[in-house]
Image (cartoon, rainbow, N blue to C red; front, side, top):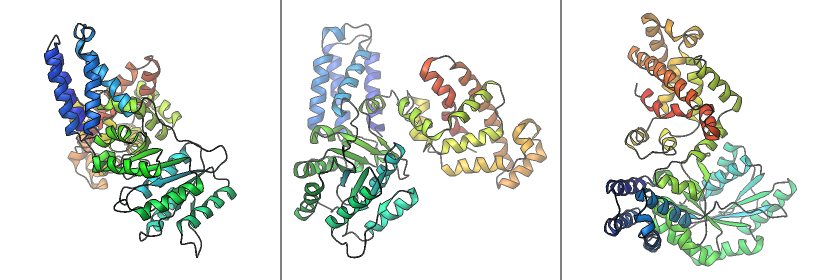
Length: 462
């Protein structure tokens, strides 16, 4: 997300650094380029105007123009204004003092309401809550079945309704009763949508709102629709009073205009973003981290959180010990690949790294590693004997032929794997050792061995 905007802003700042000393003239030219970049990213024109005026007011002054490194000062100002635009702090979900807390999920048809309901339920369960879901969409064919399938796949509770319950209000009341009886602290109501806003839809949603007094009314918007999503969010807020926004398909929106506009236009915060189809491709929105990514500073905190959620702490510590002691085997390599595959697409992980807009990192990010390639590498290692995995030096020509045949690959594939493994082993040992004693972040990255991740794209070019 934000790829196009980030690239363009990086070029602007690079040009500023090349000026040596800033003047009012070249600062004005830079602001024009920033304005164009924002408009091309489909940011609302009022938002662009406000941001440019705020940056100009702070940037075109003697303190900045006479600074030792004025271009860095400009980046700092843009960073601060982006955070103000996105929200000065992370907006957390509210919960009722007397459970269950009721959260209504609203939006237009096709925006991803049902999938987001399931993802939010999973997120809540991962954060010490006990959610239950109900679909009150009695109009769209198989809408309730879709939520039931998602609930079953995630092993999360769902109120499916009983025979004769065909009205949204009745379904929601029964679901609340079920939540109370089963001790659930949160009820997620997946509401019906339309292809466009109409009176019947709003009347139904207002009835649900007035009956249950939800702690949150979350509007689900498709980021790919850009300013149409922003406009719909504003209309829903005017009629219903939404409390926050879930922006879906952010992984497919390289512009980011909706994310940058929605808070300013609606006055309500962006609370969650969907970054893919998988249930775990869903995360809380952090304005400061988003601003960092837009300006090419990376999002290391989100990366660490994602890794900590996936990796076992004891296993990670043992892995670091093996790296430092030069005991990292092909067996360890295979296990680590399996763990990394759980983190999501490689290009998303690279996007969280500082300098993701740089040439090498950008090339790695655009590598688009196919998850099937990881399976192929794992298959090659699985075709080895325990002794071969423990000591790759014994794998001679005959053994390579046998491994290739057993894994359905070629001898050249096996050769490439072994070559990349030995290179990665050396690099990871150096990286992990160099980070020892580098403070909290260094210890985290060393423990998790994150320095190896970019180089995995080369490994998959078998």
